[in-house]
Length: 109
Image (cartoon, rainbow, N blue to C red):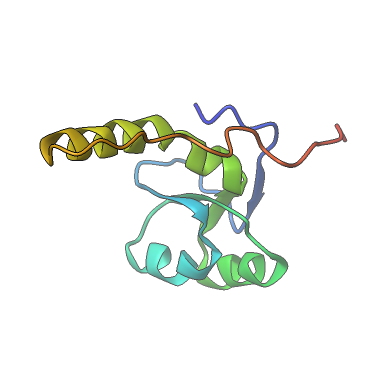
């Protein structure tokens, strides 16, 4: 669904998944909060080495789909929302989506 060119994961992979936390962008600093909510998996981006160690410590399976892939799916939603807010306010403002391309390229392993 994210159309991510890769996925990384860390922490213990559960035998089944029924409860998932999702945070677009860089979500490494929220591993503790996701674990406290007793989720089976946490999907986010930009997990660094120490975040991965923390996921192991908390026993939470973290899926890192990258910063761009986890945020881009909301761009159209936010543009539509802001366009409506501008119309409702009777203002004239053009909302543009910037950064529609992942700045990184990837090598296949």
